[in-house]
Amino acid sequence: MKTALILSVINPSLGGVLIRGEKGTAKSTAVRALAALLPEQEVIDGCRFGCDPHQRDYWCDDCKSASDIKLKQRCRPLIELPIGATEDRLLGSINLEEAIIKGESKFEPGLLAEANRGLLYVDEVNLLDDHLVDSLLDAAAMGRNFVEREGVSVSHPARFTLIGTMNPEEGELRPQLLDRFGLCVEVKGLEDPTLREEVVRRRLDFENDRAAFGRKYAASEKELGQKIDMAALRLSSVKAGDQVVTQAVDICLTLGVDGHRGDLTVVKTALTLAAWKGLTEAGEEEVMEAAELALPHRMRRKPFQEVDFDVRGRLNVAS
Image 1 (cartoon, rainbow, N blue to C red):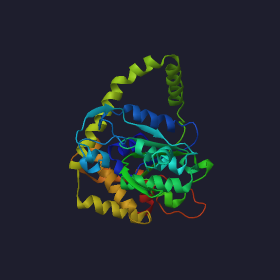
Image 2: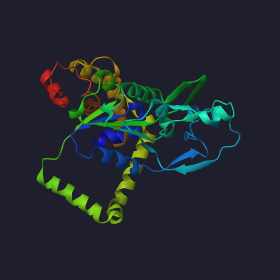
Image 3: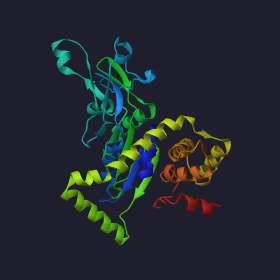
């Protein structure tokens, strides 16, 4: 789970991560902790979408037409999408007050705008309306949000890391939606008594003195955040040879993965893993690790068959 979250932040184009697991396994805690790890980012002051001053290709229309650009620092946004959210709240809407009083159609940004260059977290994503999940995944894949309301057509950058959590006991996502998540991991409660005791002790320490607990791990959190930033900068220079693509395709064919999204995600995840490890080229080991994160929810299965998350085991059986 930790690796998948870190990789999805290093490379938002992976398509986000879905965390499946039973209740009480710290899924939500891990997501919120990830946001706290990330260093501040530079944005254009006054921009509603937090545009990156160093990537003009992804600027909104307001920033492109501005004559004077000023910069400021902000914390990486973590936007939580409530289950009962409407489509207007998610995508944006027309400001009715402006329309009635001034006769002007003014766009009112939604949660996708607030999440640009940050994290968009959906707890219990399997309970969200399918059309909202479709809109989320479309925006995450394209990096832009397109809105057409009452004669107004607007688009704005929406490059965010999508993170969904769910408890399979409460229902599954449709296979078409499941496949759109780049990575998928399953978490379970710890069975080692020593580790379970450590969980309890840390939680009690946190409740007794939150400030002291935070100071105890501040240095290691800062170091981890810097490592994530360095990996993101290194990513564009990491290479994948022909053997990496061949291996990824072979794995997908062996596991009966439908379509080509899985092949591409395995290769991109392998590149991201290499960047995280400080390597200049992805190799066989990175492809195997990537397959364990990118394929469990894409493997073909028969009716009533349980999902097998042991990718390496499935490959061994197949071979």
